[in-house]
Image (tube, rainbow, N blue to C red):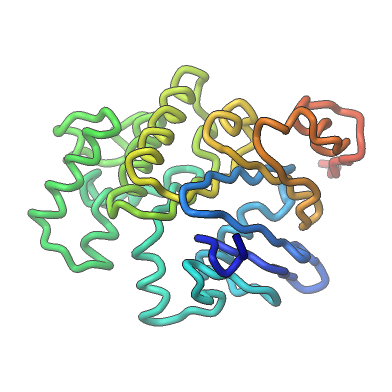
Length: 259
């Protein structure tokens, strides 16, 4: 399938901040229903790729096409329509502290679609139930629930609009192994129910293997390896081997700053 037929096609993405070249010629494409995990060390450009796709940060070069339409510099109504098709789970859930849980979940419904509060609340409660949270959770505030519950709320918000594209930024960060497994199960469940195309960022390789069918490693702003998830351990890349096996020695040299 050509990139023009892909659900998401990223070609030659480049971004610099001053003299710091953060992304260089980043290219990949996903067919509808595929799940790609981007992994790599801190500062490799993973989150920036998502922000460029979302249109939150304009790239210096390259293109992003969603359903065949160029979205790289979408603005105004075009950007609103783009955001209305994408569900996003932020690394730390990104909940609004001043809003009750149900309004957090229904944020896109009320702010982008102009849905009435009664209908939006009903959908929010249903989505909360889908991630295993009781109806009474809807009227609590983020500060009143645990980190694991906040992750579930974040997933409920990400899928509230039944998106066909889902972005997940470190979905299991800071969670214990049991809760991480539960979150992974929820992600797989919503992927199956929605048939969504998914791009995830994670440093949790156990989670990455569970929620993806393709993986790509970013290093120094470039994709240095990509392939099916079941080939991760046979990548032939020393960088991938070092990262996946958490080895101190190898081609990846971490910068350590003195205090």
